[in-house]
Length: 241
Length: 340
Image 1 (cartoon, each protein chain N blue to C red):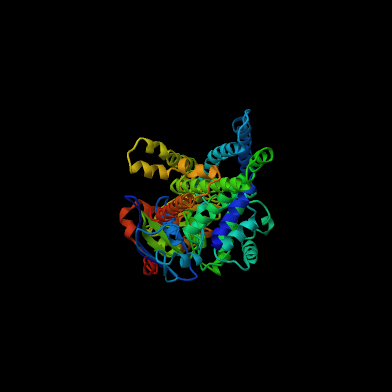
Image 2: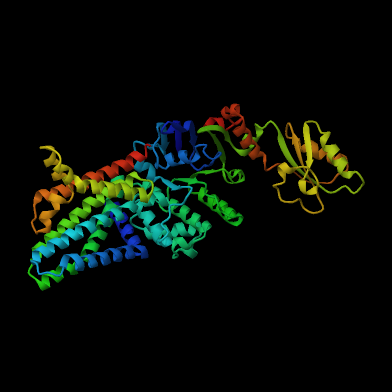
């Protein structure tokens, strides 16, 4: 675990010392802010809870996109620049490499979420929403981000180049988001299964309305664990290739 | 220190290495010599546990790379052909990170400072890596490989891309490192291998084509090559006399004057121009005829300034082994075979 934290610390400092990292973060926040003002707040009177729900709906899309972008460079980027060999030939496990990079990227996602906090606080100041609603909504976003990040890391472990990692990660996340649409045209019990496997539709909505369900937490943790394990096994397998 | 037995490595259907068998003793500095694609890098990557073998056994200090990769990695410092450097990091921070990654938690700072001193990069220890020259980057790469004081250093093309001054500095660095580490390095720069290494393993098509010291390898050559430098003979026809004298020595098959002196010796024109006021020749012979040449020239009244075996001999071995399929199975006449 020490090695994982060591890798996480290096990843974070690399991101925070990079001009590009801040530009990406600032760009995402700018687009989010514009979207929030134009579409979430709107010009007509609405219930504060509905506005907050829409904010979380918007933020979930940005969170997934940012997770995939962050994940693409984690392993494929190091492979491309030739630095992965430093980690591969150190006396640490592949799972520690994956865990370290995941922790760092999750911390950056969390930083991004913290920087969006002013938007729900605006709703809170001008309307009537609870801290619990905001807390549960953000917890859902963090879980969704963790799952999307793990999927992206799997793509990054598979690919030689960052752009390929991005394509694989984005495709997988999109497929997982769209399972519910496939569920609509399939028969039981498959439709129930597909619907429950969808990354966003059924699983994220309760969080957006401030409802915390254990089954949804378990789902996101399960998805993240599965894809992190897949990323680790992919890295192990590449040594045999 | 290293025992490799019947190693094979396949990339899909393509065989990259194998069958490969050799061993390296503690304290040796051994060079892997081969053309691009011969299997040098794959072999080194397997030694460093970056890749796993398809079959066969690779043991470092008695530990198997498949069964105990962590134990092997603790004992190895690895510099790939492209140094694994994080450009945005400062040199010292990077080395501290590398030390901690290799399990040096207490005293990582001190270990990094020692590695900086050994590789002579103290002057840039606070610089971002991306601002360094290629030579310094290569040194930082070596520093990360030795920062945890490994028993074995595995260096893939450590002098690749360096300028002549940096090559000399790197050669001295390797000689210093030899005191504390067993070193395996790869190169296709023949002179470098012969300058730095105790023993040479010539790899061709993933197999050992020959092994031994430079002398042991050149002894197997079908022709010896000798450089001769004499004082000019002032009398008319002096150059003809010198060539004729050397040609008359038993065993000499060919004598050629240096290209810069009007000879057709294009094959050895790579050598720097001969000293002014001298005549330089290259003599090809079926055996080492240096003493006979000196005797004949002195007897003919020619002043001999220098007689030595050609630095290009190792290259000839290399080319001979690469060109002839049957030579691939040849081992050095003596000494080398026992270790392959």
